[in-house]
Image (cartoon, rainbow, N blue to C red; front, side, top):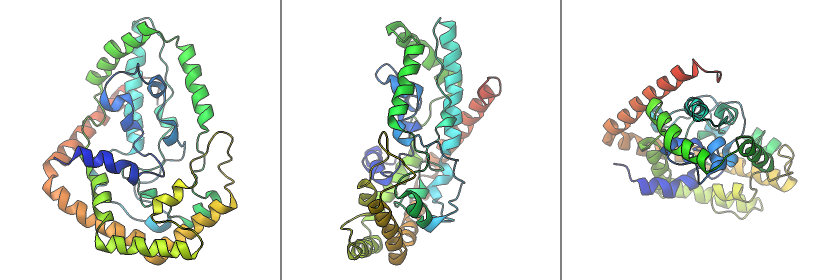
Length: 315
């Protein structure tokens, strides 16, 4: 078994710039209670809900153009995960109506995370697209304003008249019904574990540490004292309420463009990607049965979800 603790410890580092596993952190991934997280019950995590056009299977731009990690063959796309979320919501909504309650969550497909899948190749190694750097800095175009997200969530909660009885019906009757009819997203996630594990393990390999040092030296020469690529984005956090995402500061643009240039000059992306491919190829061979079972389960889960969506108003 791939180490769950490794994935938990590494996932934040691997996906610091954008949370690609938003759906895997909602109640649907665990099939458990929403009573302790009502905002998450009706909407994926705000920091990952970017409302962008869904990326293609293989990145089409920047230094990661054409790159796809071996482990991605065993992952659901974020768009497919959103379909499963919507199917579960449809089952839960109908169930709640039978219980005498209202539950109308927004479509998860309106808030698909900004990445093709959990591996998040678009920003796995931080910002890698010079054009995006010059236009948006480290920000994602179309990022949702957190204050608007919270207001919408509060409005949904009020409209649904949530009470203890509402929570009890959802948690004890309707979520279990969705678990049975559709299934639970990633009750275990060997593909996600391997993705995070390979990121962390290769980060300390000699070829990668060499290019990381070269990138840091390049950034220092450009006037930016940074030790690691993900530190750069952390200096310019995602848009807060009132921030205009399409107009980053001059300092952010300068840092972002230098970041991409230094990645290109140091061959950071090519080197790290090559290291991860080699690492994952060995790990996949060692855990092929477990990963294939995970993939087969996801295929059946998606088929059940699509069958439900075909008979509902959510399309």
